[in-house]
Length: 378
Ligand SMILES: [Zn+2]
Image (cartoon, rainbow, N blue to C red; front, top):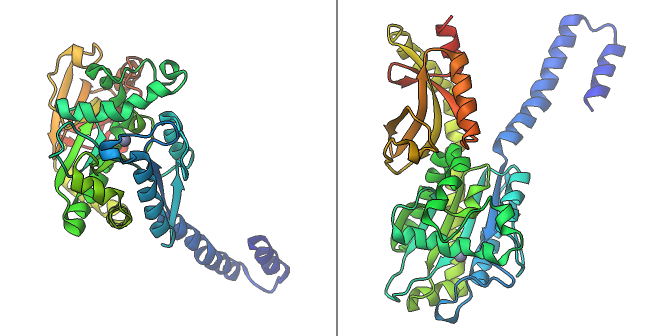
């Protein structure tokens, strides 16, 4: 189409260069911009119905977690598929067994914008109820560990699990630390998505709010995108179990989740559009800080949990510093005024297992971009 248009212009030699340029620019604006807008507005969400096949999930009050999770996932998808710009991908659409790592692979292959794993909870006391959303992190307490252990134990049903999950042991609370590193890059966005979901459960459905929590879920470890795991409610609670097992309950939960996903996408798009303006205004502020020292640090982890800055918490790395920002603690390795040395520090951190370690330049206490830092250090 473009080619034909250009050769049409070329063959009409009465058109001078300026006019040609005008046509080409017009052509780009007309087709190119449209393409860019379409790309910006497309949003891929992966809906992961927990369990399936010979893994029934929890059987609280005789219900099947795998069936409820699948019904909710399919209902969310049906809603979102009708909305322009939404691309919906399922890790399963029927009652089949899918390995945890395979679920993450499906999402990674699709280059998805958001991964949502859907589950139902169970507890020894039938009194406990409510909906909660998890992001990957250190278990903050025994209960969160138990939830993750329950959802992770499925890997024992998989062949080769020791090889596939780098020796991860679901029954060992310490084993989760190795899970954290991959997802740290997406933690901020994952928490935003999780908050959007909890808000929707509470405001649209008046579900009991079990809030956003962190725990070590295997299925969230291997995804390269913001990822959350939703425990829609407790099958072991008689009224919540009956609600989740009902068609009406599943439709309501799916509606609330679909609204939360749309809300997350809309806010994300809005913040993308504002980024360039924010960067401009930052520059003005930063030019006053030229007297402050420029240092490079290597970010290795981010967590809601405040960790002691001891080498045993950081794979033996020393010189760890911690910065609290909003709800998160960020952990940095080393501090140097040389960018070249910082690169070596990052390499070493990666070798120690922090595969997503990256360099963050600071001017005084403010983070700046690498390009700004390199300009300043000239
Ligand atoms: Zn589950």
